[in-house]
Length: 186
Image (cartoon, rainbow, N blue to C red; front, side, top):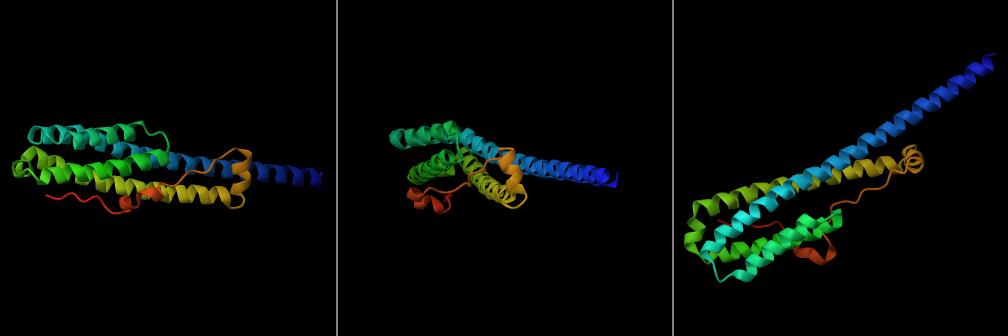
């Protein structure tokens, strides 16, 4: 009779451990997904600012069409990105085109003094800081999640319940210049 109670106790303990392990991985996976969506929110904010910035510059720099088209194309590429790697590439391209846009603005003193342009530049600078923080936070929770799925006993639960690794937000090798911060000059 005692043997049955011991067996029931062991089974109950294994069930509790399995439930706790599974729930821990679910929480970490959901935090990671949330962190990605926080980056997405900030990127959408950036994408929403760009048309206003382009329109403001257009009024002053009508012959700078190529730069404006490049910014618009980079914005669309970023909005269409589906994976972390695609988003990183698109945002590096967007950062480069924004540098060109601000270089164009340097050639127009009236534009540099325009209140709308200055306000949009400041808003973009704030958004860039938020994006950087969101990327850092995302990579932190990805590391936490991936570590939990690779350590024992998490690796067992990850295998049984098909928990997949998340990719870190990384700057592609071909975009070394993107490792430098975006400079927004006034």
